[in-house]
Length: 154
Image 1 (cartoon, rainbow, N blue to C red):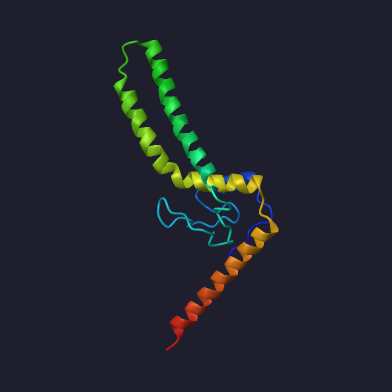
Image 2 (cartoon, rainbow, N blue to C red):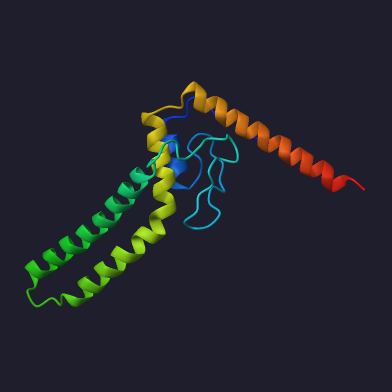
């Protein structure tokens, strides 16, 4: 069981989100698949979906990164076309389409943990959420102790 720092800095929480770790305690292994996130952090019990529609912020971050790449491709083509009007447009269109499809898929888990970090900074855990997290960690520890005793029984 990991004990989270009392007040990790915004930079630390954001960094943890960027590497797909819990922004509160730094525990990894938050995804059971590329698109499926665990309900609670295995280390500190932090509930990632704090309210209905919570992950909308993650989708907005994902959309912003994708649109940013598409705008860069468009600006690059505009600059190249200004210097040489005979520049082919098809490589830019194909590259933009590939980026528009691949980027949201690749960036998806990162956007969710980055949003969790930003939300945790903007809305710190209430006392009720902290108590629920501690209860979840204690329940997990109890169930793993019981499993260990059952495995060692003759």
